[in-house]
Length: 515
Image 1 (cartoon, rainbow, N blue to C red):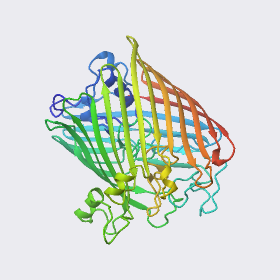
Image 2: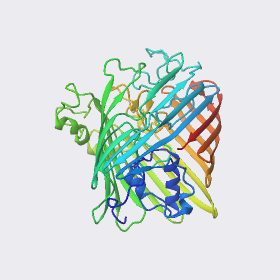
Image 3: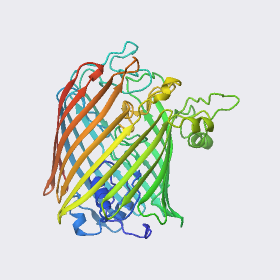
Image 4: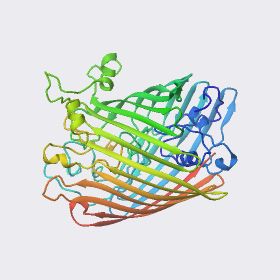
């Protein structure tokens, strides 16, 4: 993978947030050989990694969004992060995914974010909060007679904290957003953060962690950059955090959970562009003695334990909620192509034999590819697609199965503050995206089609599916220190709430100022 990162200079203390415009363009530039080989399956990227991902030429740098000027004084670096204001309008029902803490309801939603970043020696600090207010107008809900709260999830109100609507009046929140304090010492780091993490190579539908919900407070230890093991490079981290619920949660008493997990990626020597990895994530009841006083063994137990059948537990059941995945990405640079995929399990098999017989029990996968062309000296054209399948399989005929992200013991499911932590289409059973991006310096146009299964009717000989189809056009343009973003989407929801079709017009505008 080349030289070590440890000896390189740090021009900016700013992190590369997951899902940001910079991350998006850097990944495209990597496919045409403008950004060095580097695994993309463990992110956000730190300031040290940001330096590694700097394009090799002025031509590549021209496509990146402008950033605020870094001010240096000796070993101290600081900058004001861009200030961004965004407004979203939905005409008929809530629509918006992979936007972090933001929840976009019906009507108008406004959001503002910004902050500061600073670094001195091995310490990097970024404070980037977000605040939003949603008009949250009324719209028809899916009525479930078993729900104790009519605003709760309409299909699984007792096993996931995913409200259909956040109250009956305006809704808003202040969130610490993409804020992190990180200390690096040689090849290792430690950090405390509320920033989103993205595990796996997916562009739209990560199966374990992404930015569909707010980031949660967590503490992380890991490698600051991939470590050379001669046979290849290893990069990864372990994490513990605190997950919270909404007031609409089916779990009334256990309001917080312990999140713990690990993710690792390996880049084998002699196979250019290939990265393979594994991830495991646990939800556990918050330790009665508190996190600080919990024993070392208790904190590591959710990561290392094997929940297989034993004589005193023949079913292998456990109140903890676990997810695990294996994934891979292969970049063919500089010809401009990548392919990737992920396979995940929700919960675990009874034993090894059970796994070998039925590996598709409560399992899901995603597959995707991205192709980049250079039509001109100052133009990049990108075609990309991704599919996700987490549907309940044919095994349901002889063995009970549940959907992804719900749980019977920890009834909040795989959520943070009422939104799913990972794939937006995971709970419903699947999604697909086909998109075309057109890049020029200081400008981007995107045309995309998205299909997302919101829900599958759990009963009936031929279950209905509630399926969204969205056709969206988006543009981004920089003019001096300002960046303007505009988007319009027509969203057709077939069988909304297992009833009639509904159409929603979604409009979005944002302005971003650098300093």
